[in-house]
Amino acid sequence: MSFAGQLDKTVNIKSYSEGASDGMGGYLPGSWASIYKKIKANLVLIQKGEQILAYDKANVFAEVFWYLEYLSGIKEGQRVHWESRVYEIKLVLPWQEKARFMKLACVEVGRQI
Image (cartoon, rainbow, N blue to C red; front, side, top):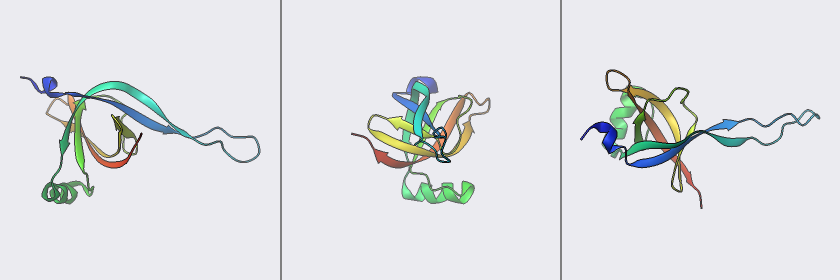
């Protein structure tokens, strides 16, 4: 089975959009908008020992890795939404030699009901 066949979960990638100016020197509240919807991905939970090793290499304490096909425009600070869980992207890495896939190091920031 190829790696693409192991992408068994469906996620959305969202980016924060600042609110527009209200005309009185303030800003309206911002919101999270989807930039990619229904992306196939694979979730890998990270053990504590691996978190420490990953931190040594990248200075990021990640709880999970998301693997997905390469998509341009994904960067740190955006969020991965899967079912009711929300993960913040801390590090974006190309995965495999030809950069056909990418690896996102993430931390869970909340759950939606």
